[in-house]
Image 1 (cartoon, rainbow, N blue to C red):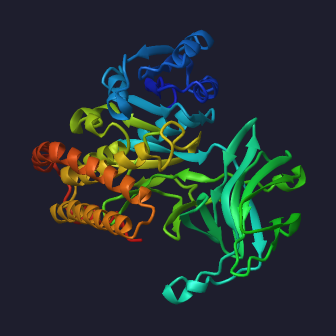
Image 2 (cartoon, helix red, strand yellow):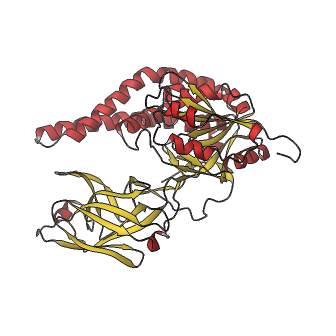
Image 3 (cartoon, one colour):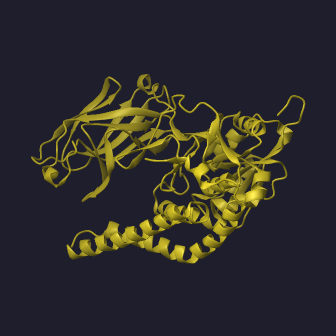
Length: 469
């Protein structure tokens, strides 16, 4: 944007599906956007909500439009209904579980105007609640079956870890010294090491109530002392036995001042296996963990992909490469579109001055069956359309082989008269995914021919974006 010229017109679309608990805060924050008032419009795209959220939005915010789509079209087709009607050169997308800082839109538009080759600009997404590192310390032990390969130093079993923030219980994130989830006689849990860190949701300077459900089974059935610490301060001491018990710990406001913002997405990475990952997320013991925002992603730069939860899209780029693929419904539709943009020579920009707070997967629930189904189904479809042929075939074959192994695990569990519930659920989900592929892959291969015929960038150029774990 140059001095004296009117700001480009932007349509901001907020996709909503039964978002009564999150949409009001989203719209209240959006109302304070500092972009010139007559140069943007806000539209709630309602995906057939039945909880009154659309009606409440109309009553509370007469300055915006609520457009009812009639039924749940999913993320892809739902947003397309808005994008295709946007009258200006740009359209912005927001999830209903986001809360924007006032300058979010100005920052995105300014970066897009400065980089006409950018088909999309993506915001810095921070988790909705700041997090306080809280450590559980105890004497560790190595399990008796270490000879079978388990040489971990184990401390406590954690079945629940939540804090009370704004009247709601918010689950803690798992930090260093926390292992992958397991299932035992009393349900799912995670082991910590002798010092396991929980990233607890907290408002800086306010007392926070922490609720834990812990056990500490030991070969000798001894009761195990443990301490709850924040930094170098011990806030509680207690002991745990071989069955789960509940613990309540008050974290004083003098300690919660150390609560820090956590990055959810600073642009999207493309992994070597064709999967996407939020930049700012790392894997520990095979599970996602999140980086605190310490300025490491404070420079605007090019990234492989944008996050559809908070982004700006250039209409001319969409008109060239197409909109979201409606078959994806949920997940990977933004990475699919990012890939198609890049194949046509468009870039994707990360703009850290655009700050948006996000309650990640508030609607679908991260790693819920719904979440897992669409992630499993959509990644190979995206690769079939856009990726190198060898990578696409390899990942399709890998998934089918994994489904075969899941069937074997189920048969063995039944034969050994073990609990086969988890194996059966996984195999059922994979069977549904494979059935969906049978219907979808032929069309995806036809789309591939069209996409590849129009590309202007070769695979060698795109391979530099591949990240090896």
